[in-house]
Image 1 (cartoon, rainbow, N blue to C red):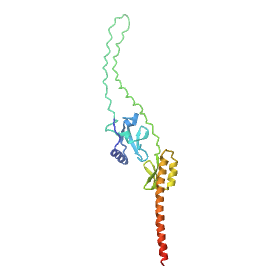
Image 2: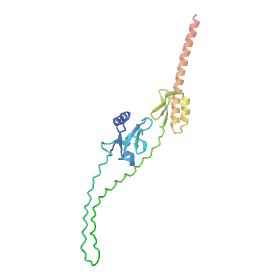
Image 3: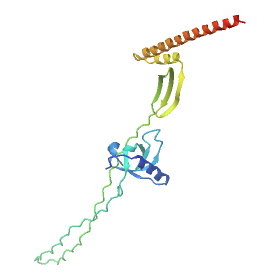
Image 4: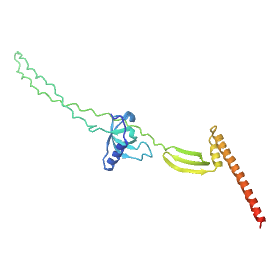
Length: 229
């Protein structure tokens, strides 16, 4: 029984075999539960990004998806049944001839006819029990992740479903970021955001004061230049 699942190279080999019209044989591993040790045929490889169970295996009349860890390449010659060996039949002893009997005034009875030993047919091979079918796992949608981040003075929001990016990080206003955080009732999160906004507000006020002072100096210089005309 195989102990490991399919490697990346083996999955690629199966994909090429399916493209050539073949259906590779596989054996179920311990990860497949009660199916372990049984054989099947790969009939399709679906999109690995949509589900980790993208190896569709046929066994009997069923076709169910499995993950690469559930199956392994079947060894050569697996599944073939050795020819049943004929069992020697026990020799049947010939029937003993009847002993002579002395009778008076009775017709002569012929000797019993010797019967040839019958050749018994070998017992029919019992049919294998029905293989248990693994219940198909319902496919679930990938999880959705929305991320609010702060870096280098900017607030950004991004969204991702599974491995697929739904929205690349885009800039939002601090007020919008504060409203988003207010929806998350987690102690300490809103306080941290308010501290960041307070620090940004203080820095912006300092820059505004500096610019106002520079503007006042420029206006005074301009007034002097006008008076010199």
